[in-house]
Amino acid sequence: MESLGQDRPITVLVVDDNAANRELAQQTLLDEGYAVVLATNGLEAIAAFSAPSSVPPDCVLLDVRMPTMDGFEACLRIREAPGGKDVPVIFLTALRDVDTFDRALEVGGDDFLTKPVRPPELLVRVKSALEIRRMRLELGEQYELMRGQRDHLMRAQLMKERLMAFVVHDLKNPVNAMDLHAQLLLRNKGLADDVRATVAQMRSEAKNLTRMISNLLDIAKADEGKLDVKLVGVEIARMVDDVLLELTPMASAHAVTLDSAIEVKSVTADRDLLWRLLANLIENAVRHTPRDGRVTVSVVEVAGEVEVAVRDTGPGVPPSMRERIFDPFVQLDAQGVHASRGGRGLGLAFCKLAATAHGGALVVDDASPGAVFRLRLPRVLPS
Image 1 (cartoon, rainbow, N blue to C red):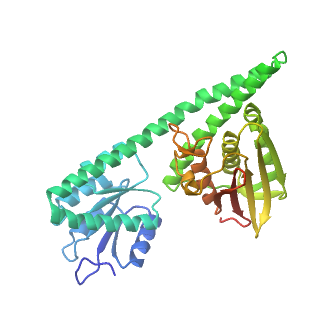
Image 2: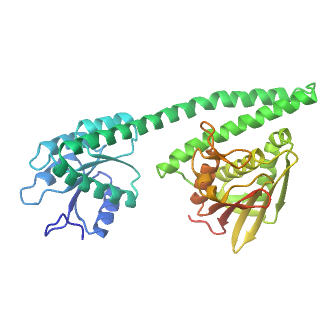
Image 3: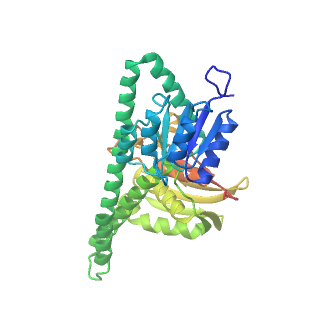
């Protein structure tokens, strides 16, 4: 049972106008030994907090958008109530932005939890808020300094997310325009062969940029628990052929041969995520394969699962890097040595997230020579 060194359990006031959200938070907290008090709006929260016949809550989970009185106003009123100055207040909001964060700090909020709320994160935030309250009472000015540093970092993170959203949105239009003009050029039957090959490569790189933009968006969604997987039947052999065809200009420019060996006809997967996962793995293999090398894609069934393997004949991935290679912004140079290239290195990070979202796994092994990236997908995927 959770307690603060007292005879009663820790009490958490949960304030949310959505019944499903209240029930999820209540059950999560009860399972960990907390006592829970529920309120559906700001007025009820103030009444529950100030009720003379009850013990004041030790922590408040407070939704921002509610009828009658929103969470910001409720927080101001709680801070004015007896015992309300020091109680931790954690705001629950679907609005993960700088303006909401600034307003939460202005009214006296202690933390900021984005919906949809995940039970493990909820428990961590409640425990952290209670521990921070203890530190505040014990450390005084030192606590205020640490909190100021934390708030500064959190605001910087939100500003970075906003900037990334703007950049991603603004990049789409010019990249799509590049691809459209390349398509128009390729319709010119009088185009010289060398010019046609160059334009085809330009279009291939434009599609690569589009994948990178989508990777950025999906990595951000995964961080917020919002990466949705829409499962459908996918003809894997046809998809592999189409991806290889799209990447042929890039492979030709690197003098790399693309090949496939498909033994499984179909899989159940998210069509868009699987397409980009394959494209990222193959593009990565081409970039790390020397001239006159080969990249091979195979799809087989192994122990009741579907294994998609992308093999190259490059220098391989050192054993010490086989876990870190899937971290954002980590890359290997052409010799397999760790390097960072100013903002790239998101492709494999996206692939790992996409594999996990499918209930599968992605690992890299030694191909002797080269590397082989093995994507495992379950035959029966989670709904």
